[in-house]
Image (cartoon, rainbow, N blue to C red; front, side, top):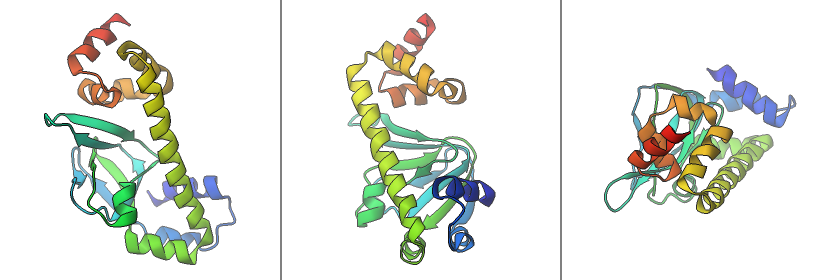
Length: 189
């Protein structure tokens, strides 16, 4: 699975990555089962995950203990709880696998070491931050302005594989819609 990360880094940073093998060696390969908890709210986030295969859910609970999905992370994307990872403060979010997954992870010490030793690795971190921020802002701005039906249409147009890959409950949570409302509206399409 390390070849997926190698190709990802080369695609983003080009072939002139000094010490690419050193960077790859700092990552640990993890094979997970479905619904495996990687981070629990209140714990300190100590890892950054790269999804080689599978998917992750980033979520919180509302006051009624309903899951509210902030993001679904699929192959060739990064996942961490950025605030906790950067500050060492307790995590505000949970992360778990949705499907059996193959992940490559790097701990905070390894991450900081790569930031110091490999200048190009800092660009990876910047890209993680920028992508996470852009996706969150885009999704929030889009979903605030859209009706529930339009959110479903947005998902069908922008992330069509989600519709068949993930459960209705998860999709409803991702869209910020009640599961029953989601099922009723989806049937109209």
